Image (cartoon, rainbow, N blue to C red):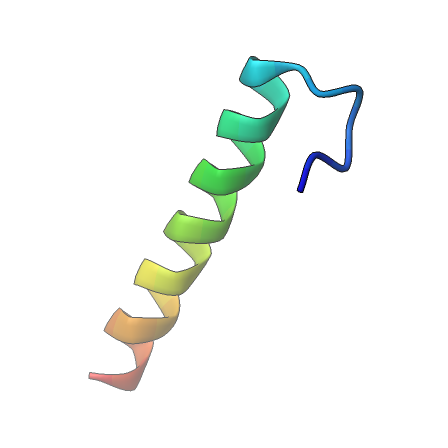
Length: 30
């Protein structure tokens, strides 16, 4: 599942952004 060129930093950055988004959503729900 590498949307970019398969670069590790890019994948990590995307995952981190998704995680942060999920955390914010969870906090918003609470």
